[in-house]
Length: 102
Image (cartoon, rainbow, N blue to C red; front, side, top):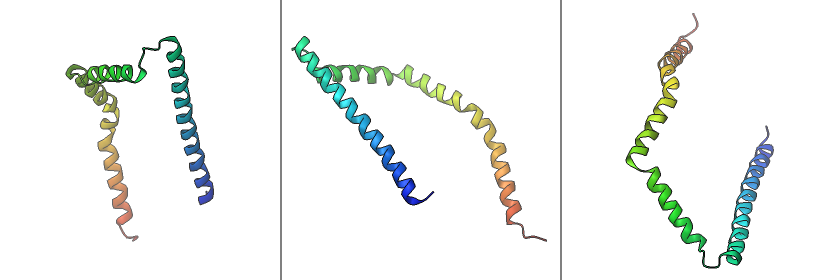
């Protein structure tokens, strides 16, 4: 691919990301406006902080953190099992390429 095609693809991807962010903020502003009419005393920022703090506290709890680590180790088990044989194949291929032709 030519650099201009790659650049165009990159710009398109960035454009999609920017459009998504704009859509999220537009939705938040619509929600905030609706809440201002329905529940004028409701503060969305304060409520979001409370919810985020609760979520972080639950996510980083010692028991939860341990389960997350165990889950990730179990997910990576098949890859870790194949790793020694892959390293051997890579080393063999490198050895064969480094030998001069006879």
